[in-house]
Amino acid sequence: MKITIFPNGPICLDTPDVVEIQAGGASQSKAGPIYLCRCGQSANKPFCDSTHRKIKFEGPAAELKIG
Image 1: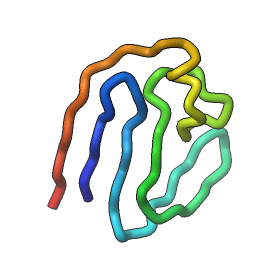
Image 2: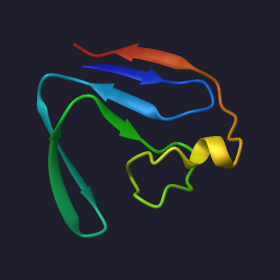
Image 3: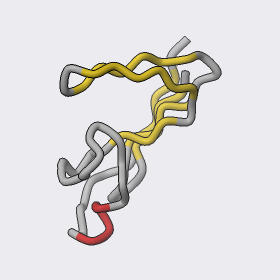
C-alpha cells in the first residue's frame, strides 16, 4: 500500500487490495485508489469531495509506503 498526502489536498490510499471503511455506522468496501478528506469539510466524509479547494485548505505533502 502506498499512502500519498497531497499538498493542500486529500490523503490517497493506493492499494490493489479491497479496503473496508467503517464510518457513521455504515461500512463500505473499496479498492484503491481511495481519496480521504483531510480538511474536515467534505460533505461525503470520510471521502474527499474537493471542498479543500473551495475553503483554501493548506497542509504539507508526504508519502508513506507500507509493505
